[in-house]
Length: 282
Length: 329
Image (tube, rainbow over all chains, first blue to last red; front, side, top):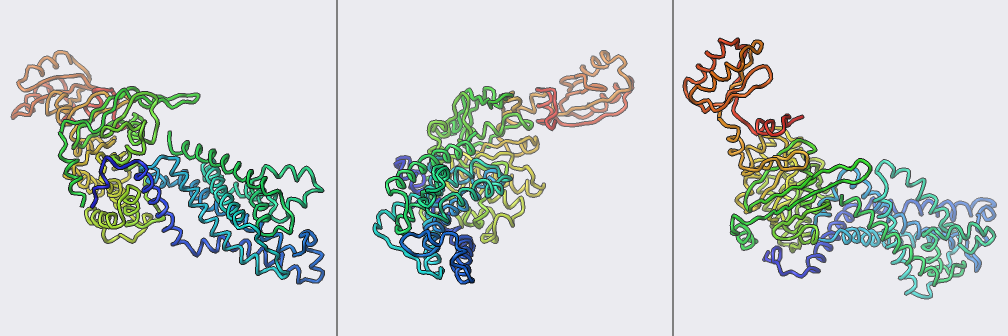
């Protein structure tokens, strides 16, 4: 007992993987303790959004015409069908911000409590990777939590249909990792003072211009916008889930979605890790 | 548990260098580039409590940051227990325990979890981590606060927890950066005791401080650092002895009449090892012996003695002699 701690011939990957799992275990413990705030944080936005736009408004007199994208869901289904993948995408994205960006900005700028985890026997890139992966787990949980809300709350039936579980799985995993990488990039590049500003400058625009509340194909009459939003990674999250869950609404080609999710994942992981190393090492 | 490992660490030859720093330089770039460390060589033998003493901004923290893999040197190398920290940072960290200047306790975890997860990061099984945590909480007298969160701890307790956590994975070297900064006197003494107790565990301690009392009370050897260089390196006793006498009489005079003559007359008193000019008078260095003080005062009186203070040479004296400045400046 105990010899493993100091034995010199431990293969490197055993040391690394144990440290990695230790970090995951710590994060899981903290998450489990904060389960109630976690659920509230994730559920509140979609809950209210769905309640107002897909339940209250359709029940108001003339509500059907007030619903901005009532006629948009091509194969039928109301605004609820448009919102289902969009709100899941927002939940995935926001989990990345809440799980990585906010705590990191705090830890780097003020408390420095990341230090002990940075000092564990693991390359710094792997410590950053753990952040992304753990954030992705939260994103998957968030998406799973939002699905029943977005499916059952709207007053008009939501037309959800999964043709390929593989595609759905790939989109959810890629989108969740991408959200973690986005969180890492933001968390390592802003000062804690500016984190409030991030909501206005980054989160709001990428959400509202992220094909969350409307399908990308419906932008066809505003061509410049349809092209412009392509730089927004949230677009591919929403469109990916749309293609996987509510294909009747109309969506981007699947191949493009997967390729762009992968592209942004690589780009933001690289940027986030560079930022992480820069903040950790001097 | 881990008995065999401890013995292996403690049983090394004492002369072996556990920390080997060669030609270390660190220049922070940018428009106004700053040379924080300017060619430091350091050889710390296993089992010692080793101090880096110097004023703020001398390069102590930068040296420690490099040695603990948190900063990349511009030139030079650092080996901890034979492992190059620049080439193999992740592996070197297994031999390193760190207590930084600021409180880095994990605020989302309890006191016990802070130690427990640290053990897990370093590859201990759950049972080992639990046992080690319990043992350290006991050793550092934190057992009644196990479920508290770090925010609720006093500065002294938080510091003890940081030390307990830093040694949880049986590092070979523990680095303490300004360990008594912000501690009240009582907590400082408790911290000193905790550090001294590590000697028995075969852990080498390298600490930085700008408190000469701390350096004197704790360290087996010291390097005095200023402007990124080591000025002198020795045991505290030898450093103080280098001043040349174990008593210092600082004589303040009315004016400076015939100070040359006074100097000569004082110099020939038996037991006086040196006389030097200080601001407003003279300093007499001497070996303590009966009657010497009376002779000094009698002679100085003839030349207009206004006031006199008796002190013993301290590390502060050593620092002032080396740099012409006060340590606290």
